[in-house]
Amino acid sequence: MKAKVHVTLKTGVLDPQGKAVQHALHALGFAGVGEVRQGKFIELETGESDPAKARAAVEEMCKKLLANPVIENYSIQVEG
Amino acid sequence: MKAAVIVFPGSNRDRDMLMALERAAGKPPLAIWHGDADFEPVDLIVVPGGFSYGDYLRAGAMAVHSPIMREVAKRAQAGVPVLGVCNGYQILTEAGLLPGALLHNARLKFVCGDIHMKVETAQSLFTAGYESGQVIRVPVAHHDGNYFADDETLDRLEGEGRVAFRYCTAEGEFDDKANPNGSARHIAGIYNETKTVLGLMPHPENATDPQLGGTDGAALFDGLVAALH
Image 1 (cartoon, rainbow over the protein chains, first blue to last red):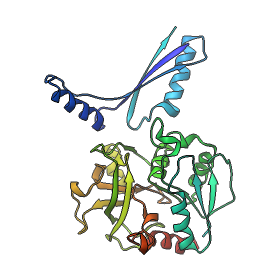
Image 2: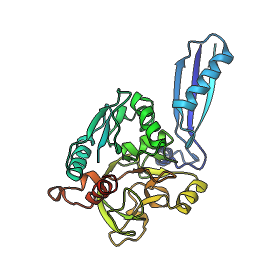
Image 3: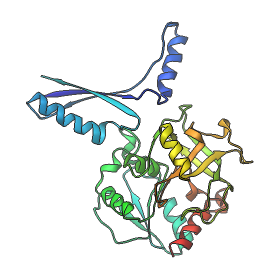
Image 4: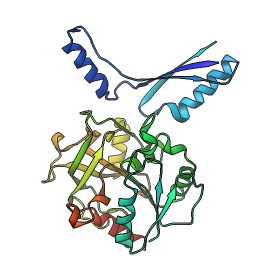
């Protein structure tokens, strides 16, 4: 069963890359673009066939490695 | 003083650290490979700078899960002094041995050059060789050195005297221009609760030889040797 994980910086944590992208978009004429936040997308094969188990496993992975809870939030999508 | 330097794939300041420690202690420290699970008792453990595991995922995130870091964390919790420089500082925060995190530099540029920083207090194992308030000049070389913690944590660090160093001008003024990476409250290094673990972004080990531009970092190692003799 596949899982998709989005890792994003928490609100209030400075995201200089997002800011640089926002400025670049403005320079390209996309004047209406507001705040840009950049994050990570991780896709993985969980090795589980039960959605609840897959989600629980990925939750553990996020807490232990994939995200740093001091600065990042994560969201998990289990597919299958 | 018997010291051990932990070496990861991608460490690149480990040799500089070994040399700085040997100069101060008069004997060579141990170099411990990340894949080892144990090593003999030492007075000081150093996690050096570099780009362990290529900074994959987040700087320091992978190194935390190497076998040797479990042992380092165990000894740190038992009170063995631990020094983390640059990538070592990132690893110690990722391991939860120090609070907060190191983000990308605010100006998104790799910074490489000398900075000034103020020694907040001489009352620690690591800074006994300095005067409180002394301004020293040491190099930095990093992309992810922007110290972040929430306000409550920052207040606690300041209240408990756990800010070790702050970036400043040569005259000791705190100024955003003298802050190379955007770190919160100009913080360049912090201690854990017992002040036995220190993490800092600048490289004192690269300021221990007059032929290499400065010796302001030497007192950190000399102070450690005196304290841990």
